[in-house]
Image (cartoon, rainbow, N blue to C red; front, side):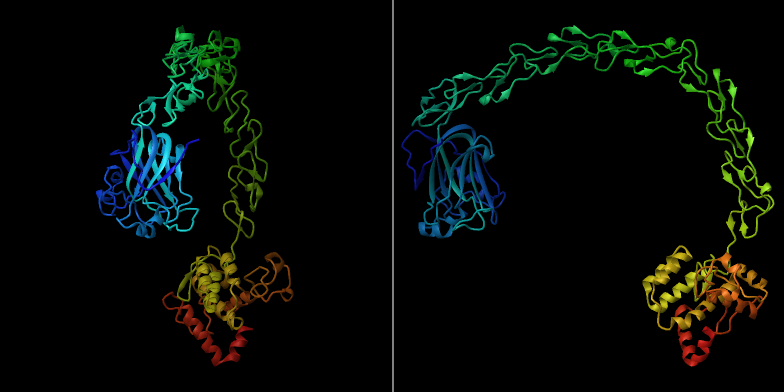
Length: 640
């Protein structure tokens, strides 16, 4: 255990120990002012200590407001130390002023001697756990019997605090003197007595007891060489596994190398093309005849084409060929006639294959032996072995060889498509499903699969201009008016951006009805459908054909605007049995009865159907409220 003694005040040197820190390189983690020589870390080892003032140029000064302080001196080589003396910065103040003003900056400091700049790898010479500001001396000496290259001063204010501690710490050191022997291997008061143990590297500076052996030795008196397989300082380094036996000091492989290795430390593999003991054996039939495993001669990169096994001496097994015998032979007529070198089928190919290696199937449209058979013309792609249509048939054909035409009512590839609502199903094209003689009622399109749109529906897509804006459908216009009337600008914008009428309706349904909406909504809708009838040709055409009978525009389950039934149920149900009010149908009926071509409602003043002449939504709503106040009884009658 290292002996540590603390001396208070000046230490009087009466023996041959030398200040080995004098003028050696020094470092401070947080210098007070970088580049200012008056604060430099080297000031603490320059031998000057006559002026212990902050700006006297003789002290190493650290930065303010730090929780750690680190300073060290590099002795440039390993030294045996005896004691360390520190002259703290005092600003040349009397003892009492030093204690009251500066001592608290240094409380809790530690001193280390280490072989590296990492203090945790070294010896802790001193740790202050007891000083107070009144007991800490301005000049401090601690005995430190250790050996190392770096002497480190460290302090912190991180986790533990005691009475007198400041929040921050400093390494304000005016001089640090490290006394010990100028060279290793000696001890005593004049450092003149050789360490008594021959293999000792460092011994105790006072007693001569060995503290560290020379590389290659161990034991209390360094009397034992390293165990077999180990060498170096403290016998901690391990000889290479490729070495048969290494020198316990240097690690050189004096007993030679294991097979596959050469060099002083057996760190080099055999050169390419050689292997084994002393690398004197030649590799076998390896690929490129160069690279084999340096220890046992196995071919690292595989064999030359046509050979296998570790040493590449056996031809490939039947059915394999090429590098390392990894390639399977193609569809040879006789697998035994596949070349083990390059895979050539010496007696030709099986049916359905061609090429030298017989790995390439017949080209599209051909099959059989020598690929001489031709696929059916109604086949998209046939099996290259037997000619069957295993891919699919051309549109209009079916069967294993695509020789059968589609049945009535079906069409397309392999006849998998069903014809639409053709007027005559026999006139459905078996190739593309086109209805050659037209569609059934309520269906349209070349294939008669799309139902006819209802122009009177609010969901009918169109470019509708009303209230000074363009709308995608009548439903968009209606729901936008409701949202604006409610003052819900967010919902209004969402209605404008809605892709479909259904989306617009769902957004509008989430908006609470504004005050008076139940009285005004029919008038709003009448304005919209009137504009739609004026602008949209399909609507005009439908209204012109109405014969005065009751019609419906929404064959949905809407109980107000629609009939409350779907289209089919509406058609087969008496009008007086419709559960819905059919308000939208009645509006269109009203328009049809008033005009044949110019469909215009006169219930509200308008300036025309053009986009420029129409009132905007806000003006329209103001007119609506003004008319309702003027003639409330009449408005209610119109809304019923």
